[in-house]
Image (cartoon, rainbow, N blue to C red):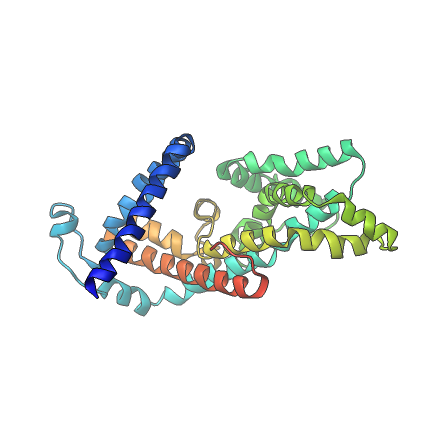
Length: 316
């Protein structure tokens, strides 16, 4: 029996090895182009995962990662039992769900823009919506501060001219989420639109011609031709968004945050920054960050499995 198994397994392994070598020799140029990306992820994403173990240790810089004593789940328990845990979790989830609700906005805008027949107007609209994507977060926050200033801001000056009272936008905890999410939507609208427009460009024109012959209206062609054509792209981007569900725009939140709006602007990532970099609680901050990453991984795998069963489109 053992001899038979060896006779079966060995040729299979040899065949696979020779096939890999043959594939590499035939496409070595592609592997060379791929190597910088592989090296980047290996050096900056996979090798640093070795340091995740400090989440289970009481890290001391003089002892190093390996020499620091193990404490198990002590840091996780401390975070879960803290009075600020539920506020941080709630604010993080609310901001992400709010942003997820607006996920269809670029899709709708791309479908609308795809129906514009005037080429100049279409290019102008694309440029106008795509330009904010290249503006840095610091500049965007600076613009928000300037526009929403209660004394000199254009928004409050307009409100006053119409007989209203100035609104303290940046110090109102109830308005923080709206300002954060909608300004982010304005900045990312053009990028998302271009991706969907590229998918719409691949729609076979004969499908539209056949729909016109059958008497379909423009709206019917959008619903029955365009939308089904971009569903795979929509599903993939939605799964990727879910994979970053707990990753709120940390820099933007930190720049917009102040003591008056902290009730709704305190999120897990800003707390990690405060605990880890400002207070030097590296193990505690690593435990919180690991908790956040685990939630993202679970959500990514779950949504990917659901998408594969429901729509036959998934990341893997």
